[in-house]
Image (cartoon, rainbow, N blue to C red; front, side, top):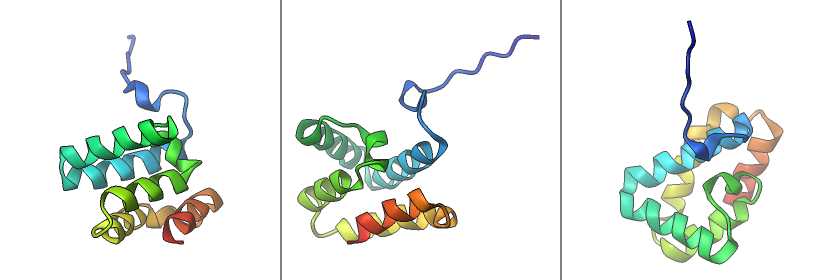
Length: 103
């Protein structure tokens, strides 16, 4: 038997930690609405030439875009992302990601 697994091309070739962070960001933004997700993704690309998976290594980009676009709800968005990732806070890279968002 041959099993074929189809994956979203967004996640091919990235680390598990990067995928977890990306999924958390996507879920949080989509919970706020598709236009919010689209605005953040567009702004990340226009300002920094990066996509959501790149935010794991460059959380300051996500932070700046969220502050710029959603200053009033910025803290709520960050809190939601950190809450999603809380069980992985023991991992150094995750802890660093969350600390940069919180600064």
